[in-house]
Length: 89
Image (cartoon, rainbow, N blue to C red; front, side):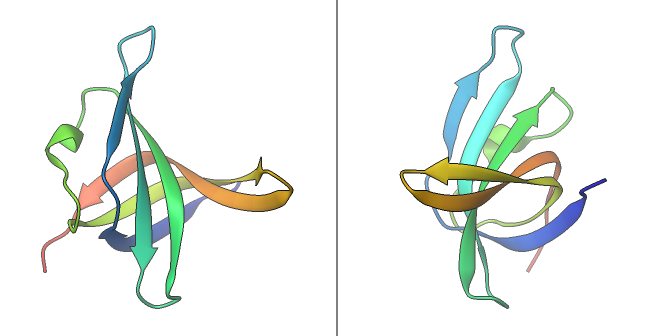
């Protein structure tokens, strides 16, 4: 099983979409200070969190699976998160 936990700062505007089943889908960029890199996070909120209250510069911990995707001719990774926690400074 591919399970990771990433902690960082939301460094992009959060895009919100709704699935046909009514799930909220949030897409944002998460910046990790330790590695000095960003990764795209896709999070499906099934009504169990206050995910719509998130904003740019919030610190969060996201857990889920790393997925390899293609953008153009480049391989990229994104985190398909199933849990999202807001942390305090």
